Length: 499
Image 1 (tube, rainbow, N blue to C red):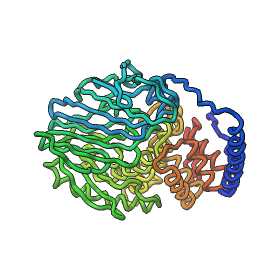
Image 2 (image 1 turned 60 degrees about the horizontal axis):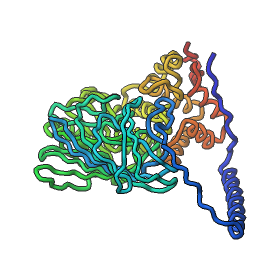
Image 3 (image 1 turned 120 degrees about the vertical axis):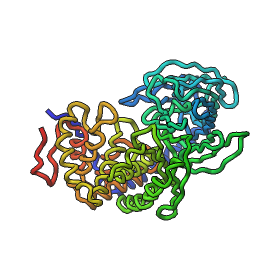
Image 4 (image 1 turned 30 degrees about the horizontal axis):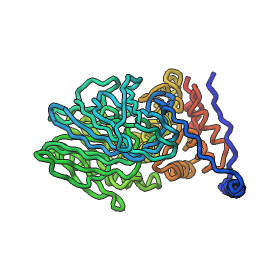
């Protein structure tokens, strides 16, 4: 029997109801504050109790319970990374600005195969220990003095390592034949490059300072802001002003060259291409501007960042990955006549996954479903394959996958058909159910309401109900996202219910 997780969706038929509720809450809060002020005149003031405790060594993610850490929120990462090509030796300094979310006696960071040299908290030497974890290693930092809830604090860590050291978890390094590297950190591999709070729920702004010998070119997320001589080496500085989850880290040092351009409404385009293959790949990279314009028109939402580009590596990587503002591609994609579909897939992720990031990894369909769906729309319009053909095929396969790997909204792991094509089928079903105009409004609202934030499957369902003004849409999506059997496909009775 199909699993039913149909939630009771609160009636929120108009925004007027929410506004009235907000005004009522504000009046009540004002009255409460006035009463508290009057009481403070007659009662002695008492400081909030200070009760330091260790931060949790995981955020309790449904798929990766020990990934990330509790007790604080990272606001900014500043990474200095000095890389030696060919040998893969590196040294690093990570400076973190964070804010405590509880009184902290100690807190954890995620690392893997990094040799920690020293740790400071608020400029004072801190003690630290490293222990094996489920997805890597747990670095526990004990400050010289406990940290108060809601207070900002700074951490500075120095470390070294070698990129070819075998980690406890999966490696984030991708090795190039020229002796360089590129990072592919999804889902939990940023910790093989630097100490981080490695969970998508803790996004932060970033600065990078990548040092390499002359003749080698670093790349990173965000904008290149300048270069500085460092003896026979050179340091390249980058700034990413929009918050990013650690798993979207996109750093590299290779024999590569920059190519620049402008996208719609002045979006800065910068691409990284093997320096000896520019004639082959520069024209492909230049297609990005048109793809950006197409997606902005299709989604009805502007590109969420101020720069974008593709990084095409010579070798050492065979996949494609949506590193924020700098999507990573292995060269084999471009041997296919339909390569632009993959480029659109990764570009779509800049909206779905990078700007609007899932709260937990079990919400990963919110990343992959839209990327597959809109890439299928692109492929249809380009004459590669009709979207109906693609969705019909996926629908037939999804029924069995639901039972082995979980439904799209409750996968048992990452990387499966259920959260890619299965989630795209669910979005296609929603489109068939409510029509193109309302579907576009639902997706546009999702991207604008949660821009640069985190959101969950439940948030997506609530958004669809609110935008359509129809509670039955919530029930519909619950069936499609959580049932262990395929629901019927609206508008396509000939598809039947796969068994």
